[in-house]
Length: 198
Image (cartoon, rainbow, N blue to C red; front, side, top):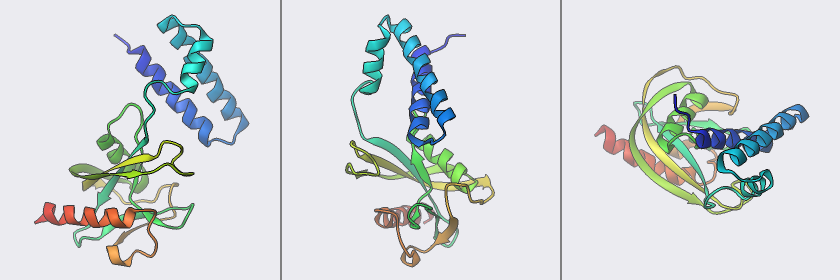
């Protein structure tokens, strides 16, 4: 079996760096740092580079620096109400969604995030649009691009994950507080749903 070693190392690097960004546990920090050491070692052996140079390259991000990419799922019920999750950090309502992993497309990420955050199995029905958020304290120094998909529910059971405080279908005008620009994006999503169900 052929193994794409560089892709494997890139995925391991991404997992370790993400883990370091979110964990407060000192033992997990130790494990993630050890994982990065192994990645550096095998990158070096694979590319015939000294570990110090690999470390410098990884710290500077391999390749061209770009905004973070996220993907969201716009899910509607038969009455045209949109499924939203209440964020625990701000108490605002948002689309199910999250960052795209290094091994997946934005569409795959939207399907995965919908399952993780709502318990529903969805299929992509249409691309709604992509939205740019400039750099700030939340998205970091490179900003973020969110790719939003209209999704059809094909299975699963609605259930709240640990990532949210509540899940609810809302009419756009009734949402008490939107997360960032999700209110404007919801209008685009509703237009796409209207066209999809016409």
